[in-house]
Length: 432
Ligand code: GDP
Ligand code: IMO
Ligand code: MG
Image 1 (cartoon, helix red, strand yellow):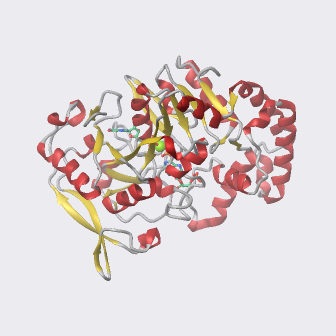
Image 2 (cartoon, helix red, strand yellow; image 1 turned 180 degrees about the vertical axis):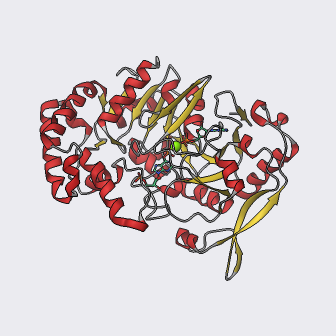
Image 3 (cartoon, protein in one colour; image 1 turned 90 degrees about the vertical axis):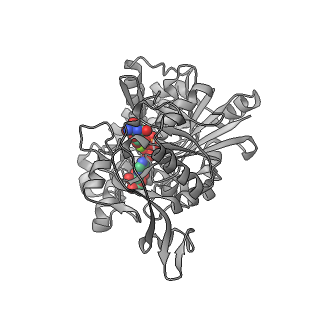
């Protein structure tokens, strides 16, 4: 005991990485439970900026053990690349510190080619995936023909299995895939080399987590993506292919619910979405541009993985209440409060207007999101740079009112407020 989880409460990119980095200071084991390198977690430590895609953000605290859990899909080449990058930045990523679940699934170049081909064939209706092959890899997993990381224990066998998998995928791939380094033999050889590097990292992740919990250590589950991208409970089909919510954490790590202590939902004070799909509070124009940043400002909202400009909208308390319900959130971390400086008024969606009047709940689930029209509360803004604020008392009245209105709307305490990307730019409330 105990297990704490950090879950994205919106459409991903809420700032989970920077919150994990913070909480990892008092955790022993930090474990990603799902997704692949479609995730992009940016963590700023002093002058240094780390962009992590597979390795848990907890790796930046030197004492932690980090785990890539059974629910993940791994592109071995990208993992090796990320390890080298971290190593050259002076971060210890030796097998003593990092473990890879034998049950995680492997992404091959055939999955990448399939992801791209499926997106192209959708034409106007494309989902806007990150094209990292995660969807096709999870599809193979569900079809029970996936390749698991444990196979890397025998690199030669693994190379042969990869060659077979790429060969088997060939009929479903478009003709041009042959030009994209998709020679099955060459891919097999390349993957055999990755296996030589990654083999020492392999472990039984469920056992590791269980042993840590039994010893009374603090295990921190690191979410990727967000609640509204969950395969079951998100805005299907505009979702990712994994379980991004609390239930997915337990399955993806292989631990039982009895260990759960805090389930912290991370939410941005405005909202963003990358890719297609409904977004009731989406805005365009100067306010959206101002919130997104223009490319040379610190609050840039451009995808960490794909560099696409993120879609922008006002905070949606209806969807936040939904995230609380689906995940059993116990508390909230709010990020990017600093970014609202100078915007007045601030809008917050508190209900959706429908035929039967205003409703604060999703009466017929997320399927209604395309049609709903948000009802907004207008709140006073402030003119103050919050980036130096370190305590609740440092915040101007209007910023405190804004946070307290969120708490009123969602019925949960806001435990952490982040006022900048850097480790120190945080306000902790209560006992955390
Ligand atoms: P994640 O995928 O949930 O980890 O989030 P990302 O890292 O993709 O996106 C969050 C972005 O916001 C990153 O560039 C962070 O450095 C940045 N960020 C996080 N918290 C804050 C904050 O409180 N203020 C500002 N200005 N930037 C923040
Ligand atoms: P982090 O962990 C934001 C989105 C994609 C697309 C949809 C499906 O950084 O929060 P996929 O490649 O997963 O099949 O794409 O999901 N998406 C994310 N959006 N942050 C992420 O991860 C995302 N991972 C996937 O943009 O709309
Ligand atoms: Mg991200």
